[in-house]
Image (cartoon, rainbow over all chains, first blue to last red; front, side):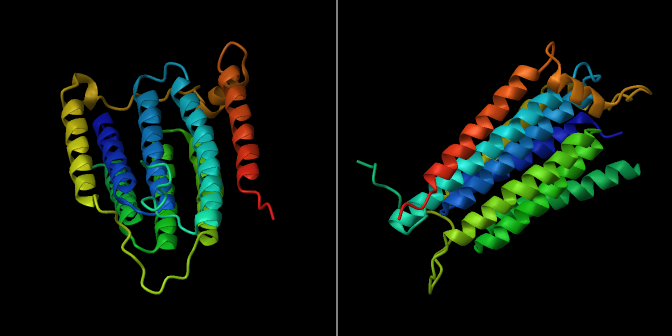
Length: 102
Length: 169
């Protein structure tokens, strides 16, 4: 009843919104929220293709579970880095963390 | 129009609207709460796709752990600002251009694939996706090795993040 194209266009739109959040925001945690939106859109894509391909195998859902675990790991490490940076430099704006620029 | 399609359109509009509020709100805590709304919408999509375990895992892991962790980190990194600076950096116009071009490219590429309008196949009477997923994640012929590698990765990331954020005073 719902064609596959609806799910794919929705996840493409969500990915583009997350991409805009990563490219245009100043605060580092807001950038991380954009990354989370992109990962969720990829999950929707994976599960939609699993469901619409005649349910051969369960690889789509397993891939989505692995993406869950990797996203959780990446958020934990990223936020720990941001907290550590904030303690030393007292800022978390992405354009003020520029000690490695030439 | 069948009710499933109406439900899909409502949930898709709500999720995309919440995602837009995530990336445009200037208050960062509001942004995190809009992210929780968007993640709930994604969980509803998982239920529409008959992936029941992933819907519950989405709520428990993403909303219950990751979004809460983000709110903690926002509260630990706040400065008392008298005049809050705008939340967009200097290249935000390029950001709009790149995301619109990217979405247009994806849309064109999807429409040029002939299999894009397939309808959902029936699930069958004896197929239980939750049971299949559980068996696939622990069966040696299936995906037990990626599952264990992912859990070791998660453990290493969490131990590392505790060490990075330790307060050495």
